[in-house]
Amino acid sequence: MTDLSHIRNFSIIAHIDHGKSTIADRFIQICGGLSEREMEQQVLDSMDIERERGITIKAQSVTLDYTAKDGKTYQLNFIDTPGHVDFTYEVSRSLAACEGALLVVDAAQGVEAQSVANCYTAVEQGLEVLPVLNKMDLPQAEPERVAEEIENIIGIDATEAVPCSAKSGMGIEDVLELLVAKVPPPEGEHDAPLQALIIDSWFDNYLGVVSLVRVTQGTLSVKDKIIAKSIGKAHVVDSVGIFTPKRVEKKFLRAGEVGFVVAGIKDIHGAPVGDTLTHNQSADVESLPGFQKIKPQVYAGMFPVSSDDYESFRDALSKLTLNDASLFFEPESSDALGFGFRCGFLGMLHMEIIQERLEREYDLDLITTAPTVVYEVVKNDGETVYVDNPSKLPDNSYIEEMREPICEASILVPNEHLGAVITLCVEKRGIQTDLQYMGSQVSVKYDLPMNEVVMDFFDRLKSVSRGFASLDYSFSRFEAANLVRLDVLINSERVDALAIIVHRDNAQYKGRALAEKMKELIPRQMFDVAIQAAIGGQVVARTTVKALRKNVTAKCYGGDVTRKKKLLEKQKAGKKRMKQVGRVEIPQDAFLAVLKVDS
Ligand SMILES: Nc1nc2c(ncn2[C@@H]2O[C@H](COP(=O)(O)OP(=O)(O)OP(=O)(O)O)[C@@H](O)[C@H]2O)c(=O)[nH]1
Image (spheres, helix red, strand yellow):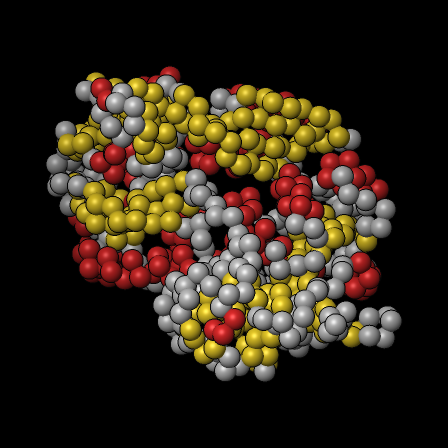
């Protein structure tokens, strides 16, 4: 038996803003992973976008040495997890590499729906879940109430829940002591054939594919010849190591450890997440059960503003899919927008983040079309097709039945906001399936059309409950619904990229609201622009963007050249995110006008 008793692999389950990153930073500080100056910025949320939005998206890891009160030094491997509801599936990925998880709950807020779902995943995967009550420095902290909620709502023992404050540092060492005492050490033989799970992979322009792995058995050393089981191509290991959070190279990673491996893999699909790494000579070693593939819920077309960018766009999407298995793309061509890709996302936040990353990290100018869910369409010849693009919906005369995706939504809300939440769910065509009072919170479950949930439900839920309600949802089934395609015509031409699928009951209203919104968003041009919304051959709304009378620059008084120049430059920059459809210039905002229409 090899000695793994000093290793602890753990993750943190926490709702957004309950303090996961701050606690992790405290751990790093106590364990001396970084100097004071390096600690100044939160280190774990490393992507720019994460930092700006204050949320964690990608799983990352940190290895720390902690000298416990028993005098022994433990190797703590912390695998970070994302917090937003769109990214729940990535949590199970990180949990697969751990024996334990800290459930961090804000002692002033209480348990949130998503932590409940993630805790269930952890318990199902056999992890030891340890509750931690954070933000104890706040005067409104109610540790007893929150501990009771953990027991009532999640159903795990909270008698040993550790009170702490990541802000002041109070109780953080107690959390580390609890981790060491309660999380079981990993199992696995150092000298068995290599078996390592790929938790995450990303593409580095210099190194090629870098993978984060958890070695379950055997030893992974520099110069080893390894294969990813599903690919079968041999590569020589250039380097292995850990993040402390700085990158530290080691000679080997052994059973039970978590770290990175670089093996000169240049093909971005050469080390897929969830795959098993092994040595070339032990290729028959069993594959580890990877990760459940998650299907995207929201689809949208993405088109480069300049057609010259098409190839670099494809390349960028391939790189992003490497460690984001839920991002889907396939070529799409649109009469209006030319060549681009149909992309599938987990939710709207995921879509926004991908668009931002493509624009910032890959310097692409893109037009995104209105997002849609996938509909199940039964044609009258008996064939069932799945439609993720409204313009591809078969003609009405071929359709026997249309079905929309329904999701099961679990909502936790304080008693006093229950009424507002129920009103919202009813407005969104929800059907209540369960309601239970759990102390000061209510747990309520609804079957809701996925379409309503993915668009703006989360934001609306937060606003009607003054930020207190929390949500978790998952796809349940397809159900017949009275749906129609709403087309938009610009100067009498149907624009495929503007079509949407809507419920027939609100089709008229949506059509009018959409035409009005587009009128506001399409800039005036040298001629009148007629905007029509139509269902089949029937026009349900019509507006006109009146032609420009004067040249804009004429507004600049007194021939002030710099002002004139500035205005022209501004116009030029604004143009970047426009697309010429026929003779009309349509800005990005107008393609997403449907999101701005109240439902
Ligand atoms: N008063 C108080 N504030 C805290 C404490 N811990 C964290 N915060 C604050 O709570 C906010 C959220 O903390 P984060 O650590 O970024 O939250 P997070 O859970 O990592 O959020 P995600 O990365 O989005 O999952 C920040 O403004 C922190 O400064 C605490 O113990 N007391």
